[in-house]
Length: 168
Image (cartoon, rainbow, N blue to C red; front, side, top):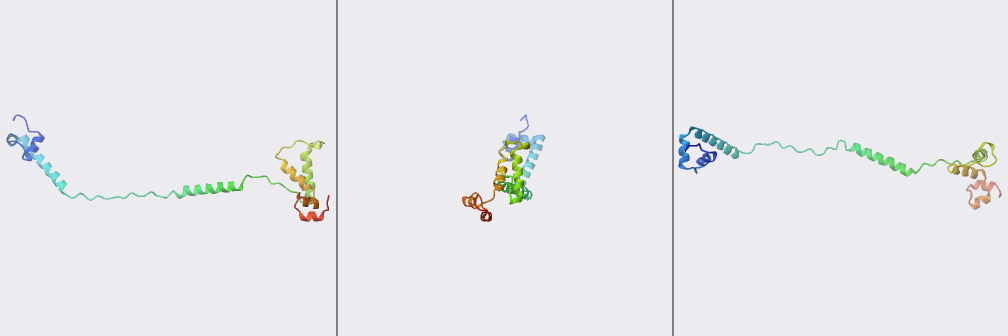
């Protein structure tokens, strides 16, 4: 044989499937004999590794999701929902309407009504905006006392004043 044996031929010789010519070449060729000895050592190492028990492996369990920061955004959302709920329950902010009490405040409201209707001493009423209308109406209604006739017709609800003042 002119050439050296291939790895497959060396493996066939090791497993006793090689031909007589291959065994003869292995006996005479120093290079092939050295490669054959290395192949035998590698196969023994593989055999020992496969027969041995597997090495012990440290098992690490996965840490479940940490809840360290979850309460903070949850509290913020709850606070925001509470504030929005309170604002929705309160409804729109309406300006307070003042009602005149007995005699002392009536003249003050009359002056306010006069100033609102007649600007700078004019004799004709001036134009007023619709946002002033509730205040004007409250001032006008508070100026007249609750009489017995107005009380029974449902225009006012002050029972004491209705008994004190006679009909119009």
